[in-house]
Image 1 (cartoon, rainbow, N blue to C red):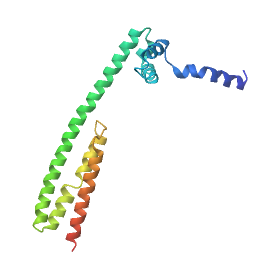
Image 2: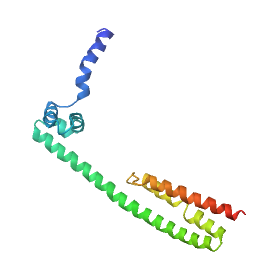
Image 3: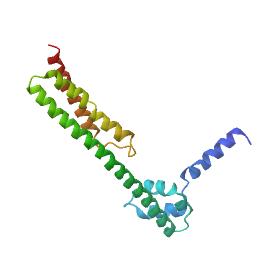
Image 4: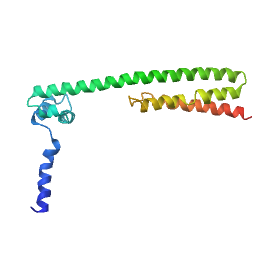
Length: 168
């Protein structure tokens, strides 16, 4: 066979191979239009071996229920991880708030070095500790990256300004 013939043959059969979905999946997804996006339906179901092997709508439906149950269980695990990780972050922020309250007392009494130390040693790393925990933890999700970043910037700013007072 000549190279050009092989290329033409490959081009001709490629679309059929690329779709990879069964006629049952195609028909089921077509019947759901316009309520469900056809491409999403075909994509999700074609990726599942049980749905791809289904011979009727009942088999496709059973596979769809199983796909959904697996995804819901996975989401529940993420929520559980987030609860644990957010509880740890809550502890970080509780300690940070206490450190800042102590720094305010020291600042009000003119003990700028103590205030600076309290902020730098006990408060400055906490927002990023929380960010890292949420990013690298089991959930791999951080629902408040923006707030952690803002708090980190603010605590560093306050510490830097107090440091200006200690250097005088």
